[in-house]
Amino acid sequence: MINGGVSFWWHQVGAPAPRPSLDADLECDVCIVGGGLTGLWTAYYLSALDPTLDIVVLEAEFAGFGASGRNGGWLSAELSGSKKRYAETHGRECVQALVSSMELAVDEVIEICRAEGIDADIVKPGVLYVARSAAQLARMRKGLASDAAWGIGEDHQVELTAAELRTRINVEGAVGATYSPHCARVQPAKLVAGVAAAVERRGVRIFERTRATRIDRGMVKTERGQVRAARILRCLEGYTAGIRGQRRTWLPMNSAMIATEPLPEAVWDRIGWQGAELIGDNANAYCYAQRTADGRIALGGRGIPYRFGSRTDVDGQTQDWTVESLTGILHSLFPASRGSQIDHAWCGVLGVPRDWCASVTFDPSTGLGWAGGYVGSGLTTTHLAGRTLADLVLGRDSDLVRLPWVNRDVRRWEPEPFRWLGVRAMYGLYREADRREDKGLEHPSRLARIGDKLTGR
Image (cartoon, rainbow, N blue to C red; front, side, top):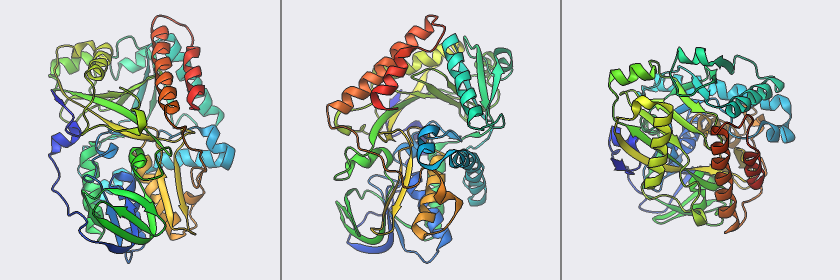
């Protein structure tokens, strides 16, 4: 088994050809710090809307090194954050508009991939969230009732009986599920590599192995020189803490994945997963999975949720016990997979704001902006955020700039050791809540609610 090496997705396609590093100070119109999908989509739309702009992207490693090349491959319409919190500042209709915009963004990414010739193994079969206990079923139905109360109808998500679920997939112990058509499977490394190439074709310069250390008005300092620009956009998500003064802005939460060897048809027949639907569950410490284009199961979930001092992983390597935990979840969901080898394990970080809601911000008076804080639902959100940030930078009066995540003011995380203690305690409560629910608790465990309150989730 390979542990680390960035991710299985990059191992599958091979290391990208290195791009040049910054080798001298330079000036440009727009400097984007971060070569993941948020930065790349922002560059894509800025260059499309104003081809005269001189746009530079700075990346510490290589484009797609972070979460953009390590995630679960869910191009989904799942909202990053709380509908209630967005509504507190922008109202109910703006929340509904954000949900609709996310649904449209799924199809927009697929269309751009078609137009740009990006082959990222994309198919759009939808997503199934499975309930495997009475408590999970109750939590699932509460979520459906919440959607209905917000005016989000059955075209967004519907309930399936256990029998209806079995016509699509055999999940051990499933008692029900929800289905949403607004989700596509994607190979993340292929997607981010394709978007990076499309951006370069538009004249955007990407400098790799160029780590930014400080962002000030009009200037980015890197280990290789300075970049001066009237507009500077921070698009670092879980790596935001690496910029001077930003250690407590967004917490870098860890998520880990495993990928099996290609499974034989006899195993797929027993699992019954003949389509490419994305699969998640309704546990408190939830998991997510896809059937890859080459016939593997790639499954993810939380390992060590947070490293003290906002540290991040080394080249995607994760802990042995995390691999064992995810393997146990895989075997519990699909007992037919027990004889199959785990080929690869890896991890990455995602950005978590103090209120657990994403934001897209630009201040015309300083020329500084940022986007991120996707709390694990970022693959589609990066696209919508990039489009929105581009409109904000160019001063366009579009529907996107009125979405409720625009220019949100969020307080910072507590200093250490308080944020480490809080996050560790939250996930400890989640895991204990799941244990109690798995033992037959008829309703969602109150321990999960305590965990939510502890960190303001």
